[in-house]
Amino acid sequence: MASENRINIDIFKAVTRSIAHSEDLDVMTNHLAQLLTASLDIKGCAIFVLNAVTEELEILASFGLSAKYLTKGPLNTPKSINETFQGNPVVIADISKKNKSLQYPEEARKEGIAAIVSLPIVHLGEVVGVLRLYHYEPWKVSEQDLESLQILAGIIGLAMTYARFHNTVHAIAEVLGHTFQVELTPKLGRR
Image 1 (cartoon, one colour):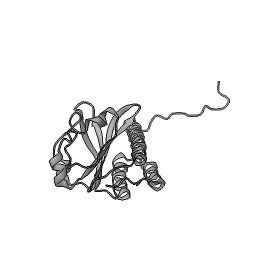
Image 2 (cartoon, rainbow, N blue to C red):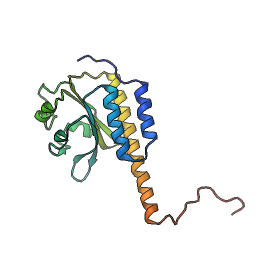
Image 3 (cartoon, rainbow, N blue to C red):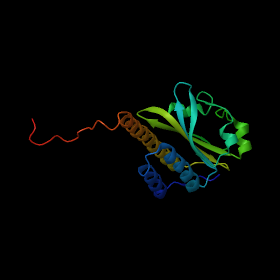
Image 4 (cartoon, helix red, strand yellow):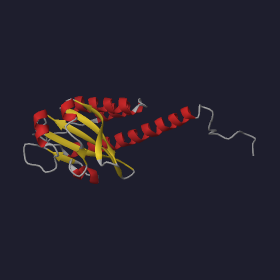
């Protein structure tokens, strides 16, 4: 359960490239989940979006986790590592130790999860989702890695917001039949 730094500039480069080269939110988040799982040599990763109406997390992307684990039941914000929804990262370094934060501890053990890191995905001061990393062994995350993971979660929040905005603009353009055009630069000689 050593506390060593795992996140380096190469991971930041890979994440940034992945985000910069994708307009599709599903493709981008699935790629990020795979990338983080492989880069950190962990069991799995899941990216959730918060449904503000139901106060439940909805899976956006995952890698390394079974369908059975992902469909174990609803993840309610008051019950599922609640501190994350106040904007705080949570590290459960060893789930074998009693922890009231876990909503489904037995299912996590059956899945082979020994540690969970839960990070809020924040945009404009509001939690819009959660990035969760799952390790197959106890994991003491270093302070530097925890800070780096918070930055990565922030980048994911920006990317999620951009992708939604981009998709909405394109959907509006489709509905309008590409008939309207926005003039971004004024014509010379016009007053």
